[in-house]
Length: 409
RNA sequence: GGGCGUGUACCCAAGUGGUCAAAGGGGACGGGCUGUAAACCCGUUGGCAUCGCCUUCCCAGGUUCGAAUCCUGGCGCGCCCA
View (cartoon, helix red, strand yellow):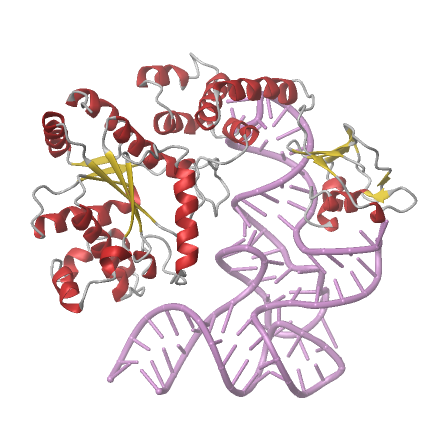
């Protein structure tokens, strides 16, 4: 394996970064790697509680992939031991301790989903559980570890500082979290650690610890921005529902991308695609490109990454036909209902909606009908007491996106 | 261990004995206008074969004809003192 010239690597690796600690040292490391023909070890920590990967996670994963493509080694750390503490980043809620089996499963799912972005070849990736080295530590080891930092240093952390100021509680174990995560870096001897902005403090602790433990050269910390979700305001997250999952159907990937706020396009283009910056400038300039066209291109780009170009073309075509032309997709999911639900061959529409899972309850179904959101065979029905006679192939639609083709067997 | 405070629907929050399926806001959903964008406008936001009935205001008891509201006990959360 020979490594590309440092400048070429730097150009790609720095794209989209929020911060690098620091650039010069990164250059030095890449330089040495290039000369000695030795891959760098790129660390990425993963929390075994959230196995569902969405585009937000891929920002960091894509960065990892770029390193891999340059010949470096991805070192994935499954934080099974740190999960006992719970990262203090988010809310103060204490997390339930996960059992081994669940952690294993989550890690497996994560690994599989990350494979949509990462290169999973044996020589390109290493997966480690941090219980491997954290569990055997004895109290003296822990004293040594905790002895590396002062309370004042720990309270530099934004989250802790804030909680102190607001008289909110901080568990001692939470103070341990950054140390544990940092110790991972020491043990696996990482050259670069990747993380989102919320991980800055933790990752920098790792960088410090490596110094203190006498590693020859401490890790570089490369911080990626947090991707904002579909609403264009909040960060992309599963709990907020503003996400696109890497396992989403092509039509959802395409459709959801088409619905993002215009103001989000530059960010998404930068962090989720490799479209060159000057092209992005043109794409997001409303006077040069119609925002809709820019978004279509973005949507196709995303779909192509997780499926292929052909699928992306197809989604664009369908989008034209369905959304612009008011037609129907040719792949509407089929759904059937139990014959016993019929009365004289008929069924109350709200009930049908519930059975078809187009509405969570008949009450909700009734409201949707009353609100003018329901159509049967393309004809709007607004009478909440209406009944319909189910027929094979009947199209039942709620809103613009929930459509089902009735299948009678 | 002691004191004070607090717990209402997805979230915030009003409600201190009936007129409460519970104000208002946010979010979400549906409709309109659009470019499945933003802004704006309208509607909905516990369940049920259908407007009346059923189950809700942390939990369990109690007072009362009647409780989200009062009492007792528990639990959770926060602050202060030790």
